[in-house]
Each structure stands twice: as structure tokens, then as C-alpha cells.
Length: 427
Image (cartoon, rainbow, N blue to C red; front, side, top):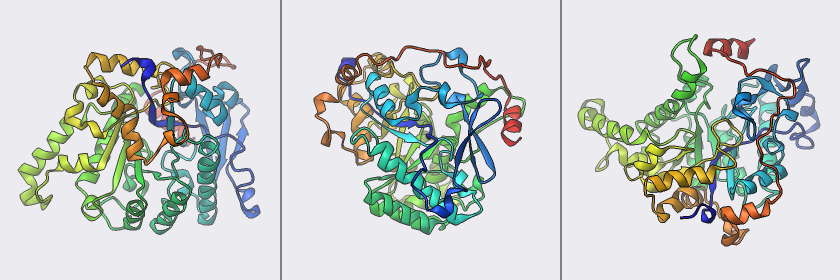
């Protein structure tokens, strides 16, 4: 397949919330305590809510910047591409990168919305979560039909309210909910309890998918406080691996056999070994551990329930049949530092050619699986022949995607250990 003929849907991109996102979306009694953006004396734009200060970390908004400017320095809106926080500019960047559609995870509330869940005033927490979801569905996604897969934040602190929210946003056309990779790490009941059953039932009833993004519990695999950042970045997929194991061996899929889960930004190369390890563990130990899957094995459970995705994963492409071609999607990760925007289609097609990926398999990975798992139909809004990389880039003619320095304050990238990062985060 020629790169220009590909159709690309990313199931894991990100957005940086604009400062005015809550304007007009909250009752008067909540406005004074709502999340707000403030400028620090250092020139950083930070979100302030419930006594917490949440910086926009530069590494999460580096699209279009030279790699030497990557780092964990706090940043400001005028040091980012406008496509990070402006949905109109985002669509221009999508067109220029040949991207038809994407699903965007949140930033300042954390991937699972745990910032709001930690709010002591639960009425306020509920109000800002509703406001966030309405902004995301109605404005960010709703302004561009067929270009964004809407995804809602969960109500983490109350499974009954979480179920109500799943049903509420489903009526607005949203069938995707983000969640934490490990509730226990947040002090909540684990996947192994009945606590979350109302949420699972609502997801099943509405045909909605649960998205588990790495780092959504606020805990990442680390080795030592003085380890360099490279260790944490390398081990990021291990967090997703742990979440998958937790769910496969839990009661969840036995009780809710049609529940679907997406593992976001975890890659795919680890999955063949993981599936083999699941099945060997079952064969060697289930008679004494009490696990029972009837005439199935754990790898069957994985393939029935889990959608996976990758950014650039040649090992996963090479072993796509071992993973399950119907379980694999592609992600761009814009505007994070792992993204290859605006040349992501070229990167993927080069790998696909190397591993002799057929056109039918490539179509599943780039858009067909995403449409099926997320109940998303961009062709209802746009002719299919206008959805290709070539057609979209033609619409973006003249849009500047050249690499540009956005370092307005001449900050050197912050070189820091994991322990130092944790200390700064709690300072």
C-alpha cells in the first residue's frame, strides 16, 4: 500500500486543556472553586484546583519542537503548538499529518481523572467532572464530527455515579471511558472485588469501552530513586502488562463476558510472551489456585476482551498473528514526545513494508479495528476517498509543520532523576 492511500485513526492522542474550558459550564456556586490557570513568577502556566498546583509538563506538549528542547520543565501555553490546546488548530495539524481521527486523553486531571476524585468536596468534584466531559464531547469533539472519538472521565469515587455518567455520556454519543490501571494504587477497591460491578454493567449495557492508559494510577514502574528518567520511560509498558494480568485473572470477565478494555500506550511487542506465560501459568497451577475458564485458556480471554495499540513497534508488527490482528490499533501520541507527527504515516508504512504486512492487515491496524471497537464511523460525515493521507494533506496545504524552537525563555532541558522528579512534584 502507498502511504498516501492509507487511512489513519489514532486511538491514543492527548490534549492540553485550554484555560477557558470551564467557562459557562458550572453553576455559580462552583465557579470560585473551579480549576483555573495561573501564571507563576517563573512564567509557567499551571492549573490550580483543590489546593493542588498542576504544571503543564513540557514533555507532554513537544509536537513540532526540536528534540534538544524535550524535558520535564513546566511550560506555558505560548510555548506550545496551538494544536495542543485549540481544537481548530488541532484539526489543521491532523490534516497536515494525514490523520483522519483520534481519541484524546486528558492532561491536568490525569489520565483517569484522579485529580477530581481526590477533591474533598464531592459535589464540586462531580460538577467539574460533568463540565469536563461536556466540554470534551460537545466542544472539542462535537465541533468536528467524524474527526474525534469522544472519551469521558470516570466518577472514580462512586461506582453508582460512575454508571450513571457512562449512561449519560452514551446518550451524547460517547462510548469510551478512561479509567485507572490499578484502583488499589489510588486507595480504591481492586479489580478483584464486586465494588465496580455497577460500572461494568453500565459499560456492557451501553456498548462502551474501558480505556486504561499507562500511568493512570499515578504509579509507574521504577527501580531506584536515583535511577535516570530513561529507566522509567523504558519500563512504561510494564504498567500496562500488570493491568492486563490483573484483569485476566480477576472475576471481571467471568461476570461481564462482553466487557471490552483498551490498553493505551502500552505497545504490543510484549504480548506474545505474555500470552504464553498466561497459558503456562494456567496449565501448571490452576488446579490448586482455583482458576477456571472452562474450555478456554487465558490467552483466549485476552483476545476476546482487550484492544491493544502501538506507536512504533516493529516487534509487534512482526508477531501480529500471535497477538491477534483484530486486537491491534495504531496510535500517534500527539503532542507527546514519543510521537512522530507529522510523518507518522511514513514511519508506520515503512515498518509495515519491512514485515510484509498485507493491505487488509494494515487497514485493520490503521482504522478498521478502531471503528469497530469504538463504535465510531467517520465515513458517516466524510466520503471515504476524502479520508486518506493524501486527501487530508491536500486540505492542509500551506499549514506550517516545520520544526520550530518554542523555548521562549531559553530554558535548558531539565536533567533529573526519578527521586528528584518525585520531590519536585510534591514540593
